Amino acid sequence: TIVRRVVDTLLPLRDYTGVHVLVTAGPTREPLDPVRFLSNRSSGKMGYAIAERAQRRGAKVTLISGPTSLAVPPGVNVVWVETSHEMLAACQSHFQMCDLFIAAAAVSDYTPAQRAPHKLKKSERDGDIVLTLRPTPDILATLARQKGPHQVVVGFAAETENLLEHARHKLEAKQLDLIVANDVTQEGAGFEKDTNVVTLLWPDGRQEPLPLLPKSAVADRLLTAVRPLLKARPLEPDAGT
Amino acid sequence: TIVRRVVDTLLPLRDYTGVHVLVTAGPTREPLDPVRFLSNRSSGKMGYAIAERAQRRGAKVTLISGPTSLAVPPGVNVVWVETSHEMLAACQSHFQMCDLFIAAAAVSDYTPAQRAPHKLKKSERDGDIVLTLRPTPDILATLARQKGPHQVVVGFAAETENLLEHARHKLEAKQLDLIVANDVTQEGAGFEKDTNVVTLLWPDGRQEPLPLLPKSAVADRLLTAVRPLLKARPLEPDAGT
Image (cartoon, rainbow over all chains, first blue to last red; front, side, top):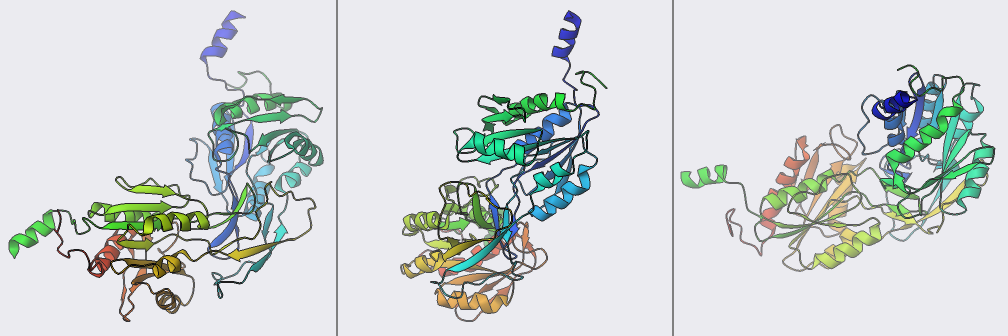
């Protein structure tokens, strides 16, 4: 109806009211010693944008964040972590309560096998040193395996080559409900940027490439794509408002 | 005289007028691949505070900065770098022009021996990987060796044990004019904090421990301690203003 369309246009979308969204964001840091660490270029902007948009659309949002320099979106409950092990523990303790888990963090997949209690000294200028790196637990796969029938799990695949192939493999191997494929080498996409270029992939083979958009708009398109998957919740856009 | 004391109190100190100060700040990042890097906990706050205070005291300041989330102090010329090799190159190209070089950056002393052109894939979940790390050039020692008779070179020693011993060794081995010893494990000191606890060490054996102070006050105490070493420049506090 016309009235409905006018209402939809004028009122902010509250289609996530009553939905508990758990989002991870940012990098993790894997310490070699008290001073040095292994990390990655994630700024946290994509995950923070998802948290902010979900909260605006009515969700109760818990954001599990690695170290970033971003402001926490108003109304979002944040849990700070540093290492991949801390991020896994925080996810484990919040996962049962959530309806939707979106893993936007760039979790280190390797961590130093040993952590020195004191800053490593460079004794000689010329010698190489050898660092053994151990795989970290796969947070996304671990939580996806624990998924209840009412829960939806969404992953990100940040890749620098063979984007869609790697992303579809990850979607299937981890039994996700949706994956966001993100070619981080593309102009205007990926880490530290305010815009992104992604493709959404579903398990049934469907895929939807999105144009270059601000990360807040990518977050909104993602939340709109995910909303019908939340079957246990009312689908009406104004439900619960 | 009384007039002089009143003037000193009321007017901002401009004792670095005509002095060109080169400061390094922040961490460096040493890439393993397009996404991952090795870095450290330096926030850049100490180096930025030195740049800001030196500029306020009349110096022409060039700040060579690794990745930080800090605002550049007004009036300071900033050169952005990422790796230790880029920081060395930037220092080399600015060193000849400076009267005072203060190396406050936490330069990575190791870098991955190989850099993968694409994001490393974790093919198997269980296998450790071995990373070879190679020593980086020692920027402070390199520049100190190139020091002209009018130039003063100041280093930092961020340590987690045997602080003064390590610092004095570095002061002598690199032939610095002054070193700032910084126990980064101490409460209220070191990386990511707004305060610091340091000891200044001179080559003649003198040392001066400073109390817990805001980093801007540490910067001022350091600049005051260094000023008499700049022998080629007039020592009067109001010279050149």
